[in-house]
Amino acid sequence: MAAGITVATWALNSRASRLTQRAEFIRNCTNDFYDSQALTSIFMDIDHGRFRYDESILGTEKELDLIRYLDYFNAVGHNWCRGVITIFDIMPTTMAYAALRSWEDPGVRAYLQQIRRWDEERYSASTGFLYFEELAIQIALLCGRIPRGVNRSELLFSASPRRITASRAMGYYSLISLLYCWWWRVTGPATRR
Image (tube, rainbow, N blue to C red; front, side):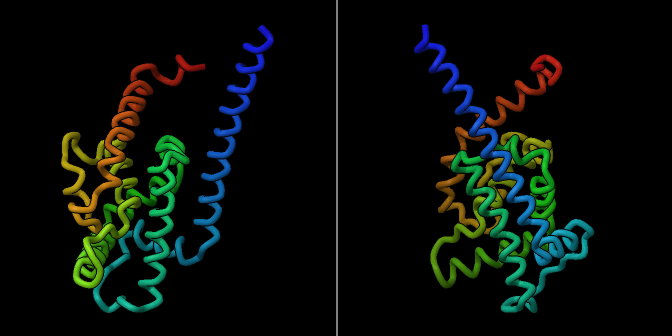
């Protein structure tokens, strides 16, 4: 009996600890985002439709800021893909909104396509900002912005379809996320109190 209570207590404490760590991670990501003038400036340009991509930004400080911005979301997406955080940790935050708005922006998409061409010409088949794009696609799916059943590789702008190993690996995780989202909508928040 005492062993059962000990195991139950450990399990509850362990779960609470993981939830706290995920919340701290999200808070730190949000603070990092708002602490960077470059990130918030690019986000405001994208959000208000002022961001424009043309080849004149290549090699400039503006391109470097854009790379940092996309890499920020790539790092968040990487942590999501690896299970450090869940999509439901991200969904109610500004990060989800910013990632989705950025991925949908025509200027950002043009830049991602440029990265893909650049990498394939000079490096190898591109993975570009794959984790950012996977994260944004998942957010778009959950928000109903993309019809179900669309081939995810067709939605990638910076990553070559030949190199979507992370996308394939995330297939099962995405299915679990979608099932959880369905369960959440069916049961409603009032039934989980």
